[in-house]
Image (cartoon, rainbow, N blue to C red; front, side, top):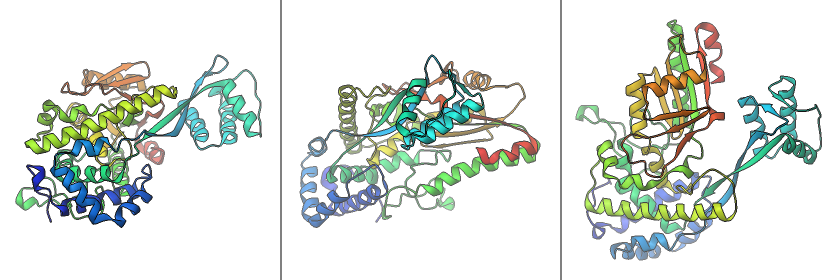
Amino acid sequence: MRPRRISSWDEIQLEDLFAAFRKAKADCFFERSAYVAEQFAVYENGLFENLQVLLGRLRAGEVSAVLVEAQRNPGVFAKGVTLRPRGGATGGDRESLAAIQEALRSGDPVEAERLVQAALDEEEIALPAHAFFSDADRAFERLKAAFEVVPEFRLVGDFDVNTHVVSGLWINCIGHQFDAKLSRHAFGSRVRRYAADRTAGQKVGAYQYEAVGTFEPYFQPYRRWRDEGIKSIDDALKNEDSVVALTLDFSSYYHSIDPDFMLDERFKSAIGLELNGWESDFTKDFINTIQQWGATAASVIGAQDLAAPQIGGIPIGLAAVRIITNVLLYEMDRAIVDALHPIYYGRYVDDVFLVIKDSGRIKSTEQLWLYISSCLPNMFRVSGEEVEVCLPGNYQGETKLRLKPEKQRVFFLRGQAGRDLLSNI
C-alpha cells in the first residue's frame, strides 16, 4: 500500500491507523527517551477496539481533544553539567573542560578529578594550589570550589499511545512530504524511502509506507555523514589542497525551537510544499498540541528552578518532532552551500560538519567566524565565543538558535600531517 493524499477525516480508514500504530510502536522501541513499552503492550491487548474508538473520534473531528487530553507533565532527566571557572580558576581549555563535564555527567567525580589534575599539569587550567582526592565526595567538593557547576536538564515528552498513533498518522500522511524537501546534505532523522527512479525523473524515492519504523537506522546515516566528510578532506589533502574543517552543534536544540514555523506560509513556500485544507488543519492541530507542551515544559523549568538557559521548546520522544527539528534548518543548509561553496557540508540533525578551502589568510577560530559571517551576514551573529543563528525567511518566530562554544572544533589541515589528524575529527 502506498501513501495517498487525504482530503478529509472521513477518508481515514482503520487500516491507516493500523499502519500508524505499527510505525509508532517501532519508533518508540528504538527511541531511548520514550518509556511506553508497557502502555503499548496494554493497548495492543485490545488493539482493534482501541483503534476503532480512536477512528470514530478522529472522524468526528476530535483530533485536538485526543491530543490535549493525553498531555502530561514532561519528564525531567539529567543531561549534563557546564563548568564555569570561579575566581581562583582561570582560562580553561575547551576540550579539557568538556572531558571533565562528561565525567561528571557519567557520575564519575573521581575521573573528573583525575582530568582536572591532568589539566593542571598541562597548565590548561590554573587553581590556587595542587591537590588530589581519591574520595568521590571530596573530589566533587574540590570541583565545586574551583568551578561553578551548572546542571543541565533534558525535558522528555510523556505521551499516551493514542498520541503516538496520531503522530505516526501525521507522518504517513503529511510529515514525509516535508522530509522529501530536504537536501542530500541532511543525513539524520530521514524517513525510510525506496531508491529514486531516475528514469521516471524522480529526485527523491517514494516513502516506505509499509516499512517497520519510520526512520532510517541511526548508525548508517551517521557513519555516512562522518565518513563522507573525512573522505572529502582526505581527497583534498591528496590533491595538495589545504582545508579548514569545522564541527559544531546547537545548544539545547530541541528546547529552543518554536514549532509555529511549520504553519507559516512563508516557510512552506520556501521549501516548495503545498498542503491541502485537511493537511493544513491536521498540521495546525498537531503543532498547537506541541506548543501547549512547550508552555507546560517552560512552567516546569521555572517551578523547579532548573537554571538552564532554555525555553520549553518541543518534546523529545515523539516521532513527528524529529521531522520538525530537521526541516527547520532547510534554509540554513541551502544558504551555507550557496554562499560558502564548501568542499563538504553535512548536517546530522543539529550536528554540522563543514569543510572549506584554506586560503591561508584564516589563522584562528575567531577569524574563521568573521569570514563565515561576512559571507552570511544575516545568518550568523558572532559575539565573542557566542554564535547566534538567524534563519532566512522571517519565519523563525520565538526560536532561539545558538551554537555551543565548547562543541566547536576547528582543524587547519595540510599535507600528510593533516591526513594523520583525520582520526581526531
